[in-house]
Image (cartoon, rainbow over all chains, first blue to last red; front, top):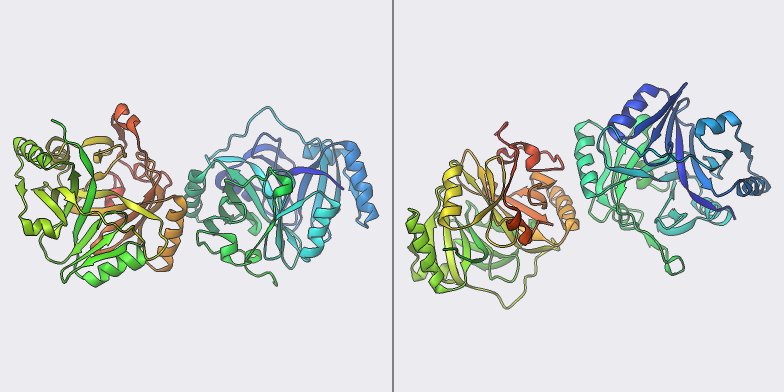
Length: 288
Length: 289
């Protein structure tokens, strides 16, 4: 069993690095932590970076998870190879760019690019966004899956994810006590379906709703409240069509053995109990 | 001499089409239909027998405050007279129509009659709305005033309410521990601007917002958060432009009186901290009003 501690960063390719940086800073509210050749790194909490935009194919998207120790990483690499995954160890340059000690790279059964990393850098400097979006940190990702049963098995039996709830066949899975750190949404191709940042409270969700709308950014879902995690949310569109989410008040599951995963409708009422309807492809049609 | 008011009791609002107003209040907004006559339709929001009465009698608009004893009516009358206003007792028929034992009426500078009522009717049956809007009671009333200084003086020196906060020249007036029960807004017109109904929590604010949008009810303001009172609200436009709001989490307690009034700037964000869009001139602040 591969023990994942948390989700640590996303890497997104873009054909317009300057435009992506403008959006990340001025709309999303992240802080630039470092500019490198053909890549910009962004900070959302105490970590050195939690998002990277690089010059490249917008379909080139990676999500990374943290493992405890170097030995665990090597064991994970061996276990994945045994299962038939092609595993690559990151070069020193790649590690240095990511501000981590060591990592492996492979594809999950759907073909999503995944990195398992050890010792991602934490900084002494706190995050301070250009705009007051109230962000408290990068928190979870939605991943596309072409076979939800197979991929749920991968994350829950090869790795340590546990299913907290399901919306239709979309499994919301936890790694620690947070209701979900990974969510798998049925879709016709691989990719990151959405990137979530937590914000401080209701005021941040609602103020951002008006801010985002006033700036002609498309709000695709919300403001609403998830019946599953009880979090209040706002989804909106970012560079290259990526969906970003702010949420607050996510449920924590402390009594691990007592929690029973629940099945919700794959319909607006399974996604929002206030009555908002999603305009997000992967939330609308599971057979797409 | 200070007067203790028990509560903000009811509103009497003039409408053109009683059936349309009744449909808005019950089916769309979620108030419970109560007593109804040819010319009046009453609605409940809590234990009281009615909290709002729509009328097409053309006999003026009113809001009511409750006092504890009959003698309080005389005390209020004396205080108002001493301050230069002209209160008068309503006759038995008028008091019966208002479902109160005794009523003292006085006209505010903005033309709205304030009725001081003793022994208003409470229902033995609990409130049960036609849909689950989460309404728990009548929270506050908003008044429009073309002479804000005169109206503030009437409510404070005349009736004895206290100012909790100002946003520009808009004044929030308290009569109990709630941040305000009456809000006065400088306006191009005079009269009742709106009624605010307390709901259980912010889930009700947002579910009602989606419900109203689906029903194609115009949203006049919100969802928003009023910085002075902390209330989370959403406001619909009802019959004859009456602003009907849901609100929750309004600040309440003895700390408000101890703190004293604060002055918020005369700008739109003093009326909504979330920046929700509105075209209601009273909520835009002086720069736009």
